[in-house]
Image 1 (cartoon, rainbow, N blue to C red):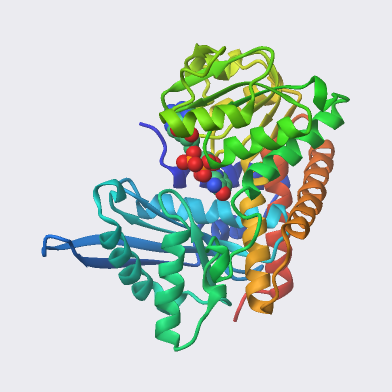
Image 2: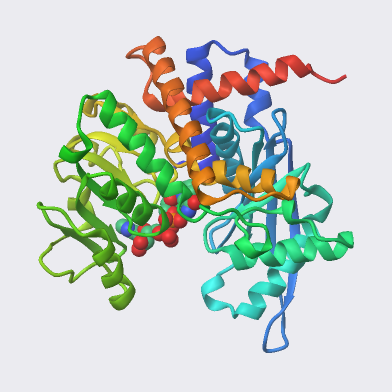
Length: 416
Ligand code: NAD
């Protein structure tokens, strides 16, 4: 049977802890979340019936600061998955050194079958249920799968109603009009593009010579492709859930975007050959960006991946068994906790702006994001060099994150 996300997250932690010679008790401490709240979310549906949903908020490790992480609405949300995602958020925030611990929330529901008003009532009731454990100092939610800026507005409004005054810093990923940050929407894709560019430079590759393949032409994939092509790279293939398109001379990313907006898919784009999502991953290229789903690079296809650099835009695109193979096949692997951290970094900027009631222009947001991405990329590179061949790129990023979490734990000490 496949391992569940929590088992995978705990295994990654154990493997890395072994490389670092971490104390066993400390590993046990980090395997468990600080707190998990399971809540009943009753909703009056549009037809008058009451439907009860189950929601969670997991807070993994708060030694470095308030918990931070998205809220997911999906039929397959479970407590284990929510805890695993919170744990990954702890590492993601630590690897880029922003002062947060990992959190995550979710409700097992199918938003595709619910009306906008039902989703609003669901969101407001869930926010009320987790109210005792969230605040701008304690736990700051954000959007995740099937939640968006509108949902964040409802979270912010509900929390503010209970407080009696507006609290923009309670969530990030809000509309700019309510205290959201400029540059937030493109931030994850921009971060992916920045680290991919840095990796290319390290390998002595000119971006103008780089051929890029992107799986998933959504928020992350589109912005990464757009920014890399603006920097001179050739985007030779992109895909969505229906399949991919390939053009050796390079796709016009904006035109592909227009085509997708018009027709609902990248398929049928003029002058491009169609490829399946499986074929797309195996295309010969310089930079491969999986930016759709988790678990797409497995031990079955890892051997056939033909890229010099992988920048993991999606969360968990590579299964643990494929990790080692990818490390041997590719010259540089930028693991998800580093590659797709641009979103949480700009979320951090949003929170800082909300707390200060002073808002930055997009230029400043992008410049500060770039600084953190480059610094973190170089730090992971350094750790990878120190650890040598035995450690994968994922081990290197995770051990940098773990070192920071453990340091904070040691400095604070164990109470009582
Ligand atoms: P999105 O919904 O905007 O886009 C997802 C894209 O993937 C869509 O184009 C969809 O058609 C495509 N897709 C779906 N199934 C596919 C399949 N089987 N094969 C190929 N393509 C497929 O989502 P997003 O926000 O761009 O997120 C993409 C990934 O990045 C997810 O793994 C997400 O967890 C991760 N991520 C996103 C952010 C963020 O800020 N948006 C931050 C960190 C990580």
